[in-house]
Length: 453
Image 1 (cartoon, rainbow, N blue to C red):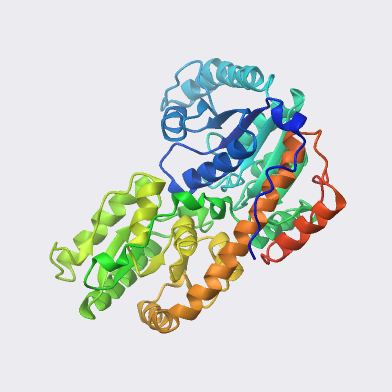
Image 2: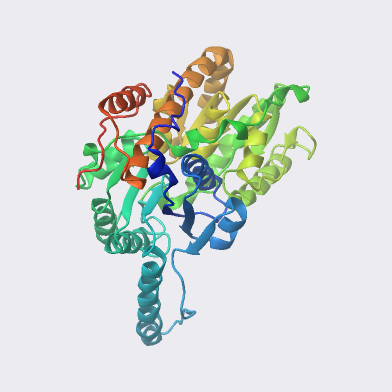
């Protein structure tokens, strides 16, 4: 299914009127999945709203400005620098004399930023989790900005967002409250919808659309470069252990077993004439590739030669280029898997979060997964053999589902323009077209002009 953008649908008045649009998310810290999400939504909204003013509320504003040519402010601005005393009484004093002024300042800064903003968008990513704490990256920061947005009269849109895990009562309260304030909500996958429904939020009233990274610009996709090497290349995407983002009670032994299973798989590949390309999806994964190279050298006796390719990955463009230079991929990070599929690469996914299984189900590759907690090298080798054997059919299935996902997201961008530009109304034929196109992706459950609050 191929759906062409309909850039001429909106009225000329609503398109000419300059809108102030802010994005919220954990951007700028080197997570290439998050960066690809922001790149995708920026590309599509800039092309549809060329006169709009865009800004980003993010974790690292300076990096976001440099990467995306976008004005940016911090999620948690600081008025007074804090410290971490060991004495309990000093910690209480610090909370009162430093924490309270800082928090008041953050609310005032949020008001100052959003009072002249029309729309606040939370684009994709897994912002609905307290695995890294309530504050900073957690649900409280999201809650603060969503409440401020509504007090300032902004429209609030959650588009293709993921959810979970949320372990604490406070985390569930802040997440549910922020979501209830939304004018529009859509979920990245069925599993996020079910997760939120399980904690008492009526997520099944909202549509499910694919991850926004499926809508990266076609012009950004590099040409396949596998023909430049003499031997077939298998990409192995490594990841630091996700800890509580993966399971409530993480164990160090899981990471050790994960590395040993991939080490055994890598030795098998090298013995059968494959080259290996090491991949990452977050800049923090660099230490894992260094550790893996050390294991290959010290435990497997693999010398540091050109059979194991380990080139720097700093940006989304770097990652795409390196994925394009592989024949098949075994990956752990969610967006390593997704971008491989986007480039028509057969892939095996190592599952560390429910989103990974949901993605592989969506794309028709549920048989090519393994849970990170029970990763088995022999099973991985057998899955790889099957992947290699059926690569042509798999590519055909993947390409069809990727194209359907891109079409569904194209329709979602048109749909949310009615929230960014309220003067624009969708006609009944447009609504039917949106519903049918998105349903064809296997993802959309239900659709309407706005979320039920």
